[in-house]
Amino acid sequence: MTPPLVLPGGSVVTVGSFDGVHLGHQVLLRELRERAERAGATPLVVSFEPHPAAVLAPERAPARLTLELERKEILAELGAGYLVVLRFDPARAGQRAEQFVREVLLGRCGMRELVIGVNHRFGHGGDGDSRTLPALGGRLGFGVAVLPPVLDAAGAAISSTRIRSALAGGDLRQAARWLGRPYRFSARVLPGAGRGRTIGVPTINLEGPAPEKALPPDGVYAARVEWGGGVAGAMLNQGHRPTVGDARRTLEAHLFDFEGDLRGRVVRIEWVERLRDIQRFPSLDALRSQLALDREHALGVLGRLPETSTARPLGA
Image (cartoon, rainbow, N blue to C red; front, side, top):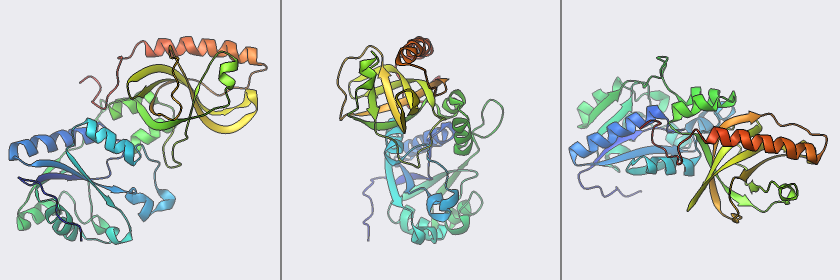
């Protein structure tokens, strides 16, 4: 049996998948921190891995905006406090909300207060929701704060589903507005064939993200690459390389004004703006000319952005 966490003052807890950690999630996290500070307690996020939908309905499971390590990184940047990641399996799926609250939230986490969104549910059949949980808290002795949805400028609720839809349609600006940051992923730099260097456009070759990671449409993008100790603007090729006869779907980035060696390093890629479709050119000279135009286009896009990027909401 898992021992309880040692949290002097107990905890204020929120529960959810937090895929994307978007602006709606960030409002909830801010409320979590503020309530924990007032109560002299620890802010604590309880989440699940894999995504519950991958267990409950794998054929309909959505692509992930944030894989597990990415989600942990963003939550840490946002000051979420403690994170407890529970394995989601058929046994967990069969737990009623009251059992989950008693065994995990109260018994393991020392919960004093629960913060949830009005539309959030957990427990078998979704029996823990904004109506039943306050009543349960009254019986078991913990408070429940229910937050309204966070709306965008058009008055619609921000959600992971809407962000996935924007991303799939190539609307990176809209996805970034709802996320509060450019869409991104982390990957290891792999050794490459060196083709880019032969035409004067050296690239880093990136380990492809897991199949469940949501990606924008294939194409050439203005991007930003960050690693421990550095950041550079870039143009990113996502997809196949028909001009050189490579039908594999790959990710490679040409970094601007950078001469170092990142092979073996883990870097973070941010898609900023789509520049064009993947094209087949009649010659390497024609490809080289187009890449020069792509470079100028990408530099113009990136020049309108702040020098650094964080998980904090845009405009904060």
